[in-house]
Length: 166
Image (cartoon, rainbow, N blue to C red; front, side, top):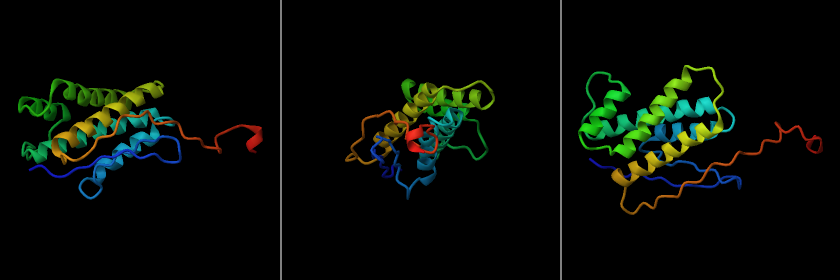
């Protein structure tokens, strides 16, 4: 029932960017959503929150399927999370991370107010912690989990208005 999953942190371009690696071969969609979240933190915080919600939904669905709990019919994320809690698969701390992503991703998808990067960073941290939790439970015992690092804003000379760069 439990399959090998791996996660690693890599640094790109010297900016300390964390990239989630949940084995491309086994779950490329989960990795793709996590990368999209990270790539949008500084430029589009709303998108980062929506990607965080999507990551939570995809991860909860993956666990539900692996544990043979996913119903034949479509179910809401909130109901799926309650079922995983009732089955003893989610601790209160992990459930709160899933709920934070669900609630904030949904709220911000329907709200026109500005979303600050600190909220997107919170989503990033929750996704990172959920990915690590998932790997701890469903991954190889030999997998060494990385420490969390805040992704640094990448430098884009095209966006810089500095006269020295022109």
